[in-house]
Figure 1 (spheres, rainbow, N blue to C red):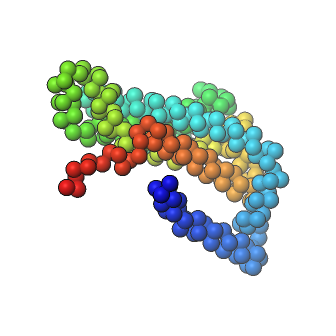
Figure 2 (cartoon, rainbow, N blue to C red):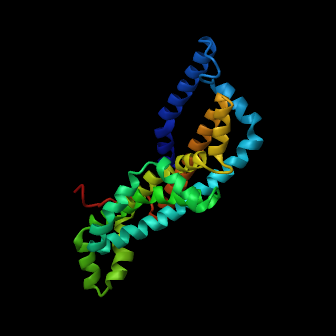
Figure 3 (spheres, one colour):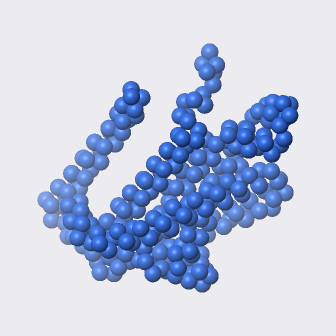
Length: 261
């Protein structure tokens, strides 16, 4: 209980800062007579969100589905690619630069190809999310496995373990914290990628909803879609943190008790 209260106190300054910023934003829009088409006040955004919720919610569900499924594929493929590249120096040398180069391509140049291949269906957006989300996971998987001290493997192999068993039960377990670092980086922009892909070509989703708001110059709705994407990202990050806690336990348990002696 004490540890939970301490963690809650850690977020108190953030909550206070957000409240102050929102209040200042509202006062500035009201006192400064700012045009609603330029920037909307928080109260106008809330009202617009409530009024358009019957259409905003279905669009949110589409983008959420694309994001969560694409993210799951990115995690799976990213870890597998990282393991394969770690185990094969030849593949790492031959293909890793190509993987890195693929990540430098802007989404606006890749999305038309996926539209040609998949059409305007949801599957195309899932594929884009997975492709753009797997790189940091693969990189952190490789780096995490390379950072595992050699004596972990030596002890396991000396005790009769196979190399495959050692990789799965020893090296991946030791590297798991660093792999989760890559997963968090990927999760931070999953839904932004999904919405952008929808904006460039889709039938439904937050990207299309955002495009309609922009075309009609309804500024509050643009903010509504933005905050929904932020909320979805926050939910995904919470899921990642909870899964890490359940699978690996608190990070404090990984500390060496003899390190401070």
